[in-house]
View (spheres, rainbow, N blue to C red):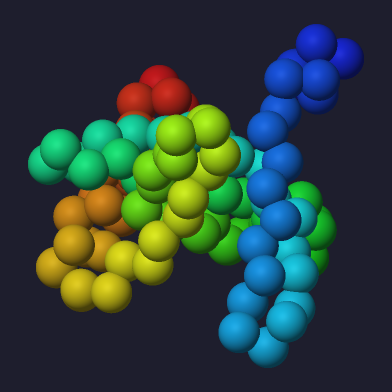
Length: 91
């Protein structure tokens, strides 16, 4: 990864219900059925196999707002869309 790519990385810190904090790199924002979603990859290499998917919005000041995906059918559609994006990048 180049120095420029490192500088352009967007890092978000997730705080879970048990107050555990995980720093994540934003892989990208993508749209599924009119709703934006964000894919986050933990910076901790021991968690590198996990990708977190959240609903994504911004407030009036441009601050990120993440929301849980609570419905299985929505999560399945978002997960499939993310997998398709990743497959295209691998080619």
